[in-house]
Length: 355
Ligand SMILES: [Zn+2]
Image (cartoon, rainbow, N blue to C red; front, side, top):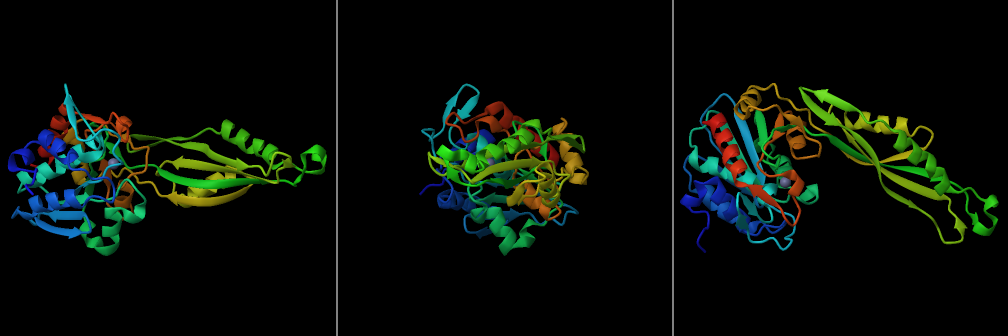
């Protein structure tokens, strides 16, 4: 089969975005796109390329004092009547245009056209970011070949609409339980209603004042929310148990342990069980390559509110940020699109930084 990633396509980040979008690659079905990208990378004498599953790592080894990572995931969420791509005015529509084949196009375009970057560069094109983390290509590489990830700074090309989103917030879920005593609802005074008792849990949530935290000039706005509630036995039984699942999104100045302690404190007097948690990432914008990257972008960074793979790099002590042309508000939506102007602008920014 002829590789649609021809030299002319690879030289133009806009054409490359479309070509990548037009290779279907829903999570766990990335073999074809990984094969096509691998073929390109292996043809480049200035890169050393390795593959693990459907994840590709390609790196320069120019002996530069510092190394940076450019990383993008190859997979998309399931198609939603939005494949292949279409173009309309200044926009390209289609599954993965924003999240994040336009970002992948940045990295692949640079990998091909910039044989002697100012820093050594490690490129990652990885599988399965959109599904559970046990499939995540970066996670698998971190377990199998942790040295592949070694770097001084990392840029994840996730959709940020052309601004720098630094660090990321942590997330934890916990279950808050209230207990009562079952009784026939015709004689409800014999029992204690656990669902009524949960009213006090909801009151605390409604009265909760979330923190806004500023770190390195980035603002992180926290949130503590009930995301699910479960209780009730039958239509004629006073319930003896109610469970409120809460999700706490916390600024990266708190560790998961501190976040857990905070949630315990908010629900003091109730039974609180931690379900899961993931640490956030400090913005870490003081490393030299990060400072120079921000200068190339020329606009102030903002705090990343969702959890992203930057936290994987942060856990290894590598400062990381998100920068991509896609609009995060349309990621995963049927009308997902990316603006051609932002692709051109962002690609020029990265080139200014690395050339
Ligand atoms: Zn993404």
